[in-house]
Image 1: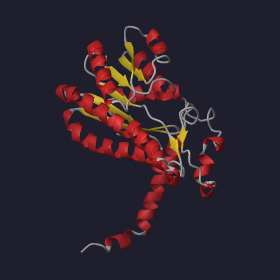
Image 2: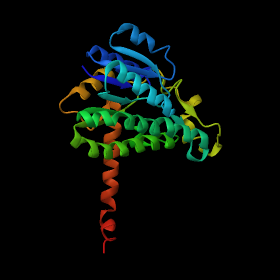
Image 3: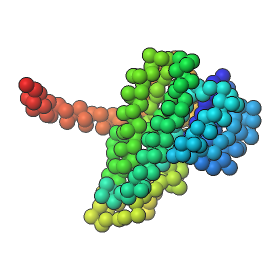
Image 4: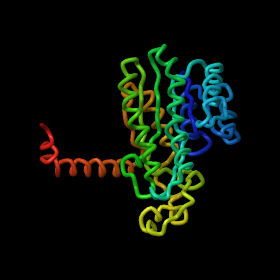
Length: 274
């Protein structure tokens, strides 16, 4: 039995992952900015779950949540950085305060949590850190530049972290979900207050008024939760886990495009050597 701490559990992937981890026999510290919705998870598993308020942009709440989890279930074995939100804006439209908050939530919050749990994981020479990214890290659609930047930062940090801690027995897995039937493209999405008409046919097509995908996404968050638990508990946890057939399609396309671009200029690139 492991102690999991999962952020962003009020709905969607985090909510279903918490249930999947509990069904698999683990203890779970279930967190969200507001505890009303996550309390129903604890009600189903009162002996193995606790609900805590956690805003990942608040360093003091992070310290308190980690301490409360350890007090109840012992050292944290699995950290899942799931809390986050989208932000849609052309790069020129992006608001400074909005972008700062986005990075605090999607990148610096996970970093603080990782730093909070690593001392115990290093001491035990075991543990797992799961960072929920997005296929946006690969396809970087118009209007998602800032969101994609946060996820690329998370993935790059995760790769370095893996190389640092894997010799210590600690796993680091990045997860790239495709489109899942959650609130991500609905209630949770944010966008810039500024609107520049010249971007109407690029970034503008993805603003809330033009995006009708919410509720029609192909991904099933319950199945995703089960697969995540299976991957974490596997003896062969992948470095990168894609979720959804659309994720497979998008990532294959983007990687092939990168390879094609590399090959097209390979000869010229080599000419820059001494």
